[in-house]
Image (cartoon, rainbow, N blue to C red; front, side, top):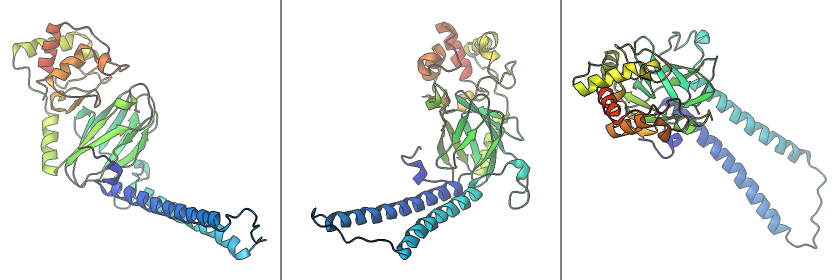
Amino acid sequence: MQSTFPVFDPASPQAESIRDLFVQVLFISAGIFGIVAVLICVALYKFRAREDVPKQDFGSHRREIAWMAGPVIIVLWIAAISIKLMLTINALPVQYAKGGEHSDDRVDLIVTGHQWWWEVEYVGTDVVSANEIHIPTGKKLRVELRSADVIHCFWVAQLTRKMDAIPGHTNYVWLEANGPGVYQGRCAEYCGTQHAWMNFLVIAHDPDDYEAWVQRESSEPAPPSNELAEKGKAVFMDLTCSQCHAISGTPAQEDFAPNLTHLASRRQIGAGVIENSKENLHTWLANPQAIKPGCKMPNFKLSDEQLDQLVAYLETLE
Ligand code: CUA
């Protein structure tokens, strides 16, 4: 899954270009450092005797031009390769994206940063999800980034560049994966208490599997199949849960908090803070503030009976 040095383990053409630029700049910097370090050592050795005053040099136009021109050429070269990279990896805002390979003004995904989770809308479908972005492999998707509150930063190191999600302003970024896999995404801009737990996963599928996933995700979850889950659904709808969350096909239709339509199929709870399991769901609902202090979900002080019922219901949302 998460690689130790994700920038050096790129999994998309965009991330490969970023890695290449990083390595080039690293080698140029290492080269300059090496030359300067050697010259300092030579000077230290050559002029080590205190009584010797070195032969004085009162200027050389040739050398002055060389040490001015050298850095200028290096800086221009780094600027040129950086600009080339930016033109390759930056998704133009829709209104400017005319002509060329991506002449269509489509947006594939709308990702909105919230304190402290990510909302994901799949344009052209009814699917709305949270903290997991499913994509087909080999397709360059234009992601529109928004924010519901403060500035966040969308970053999947193995797939794409960082891009801020800013309230009142839309940014765009390409999202693409060479092969199927699970890639770690993070918020890369400090955005409040739980910035560290504003993670998400990008899950890349083969195109056929992706279509099947969209089909599954577009469907309404099956009604609760047992009495416990039935009671849990009543708790969800009657208590405050339904005043913040949405579950497709039910009266719960609010978008203040993550959409829970297919919660049981997700891998994590609370934007990566814990794995999604029955036990963890129970712990989370018992007191979200104990697991993710400061998050917008309060401790509802549910009884053990209510917790069991709610978990049983949420587990049916596959
Ligand atoms: Cu959102 Cu940091």
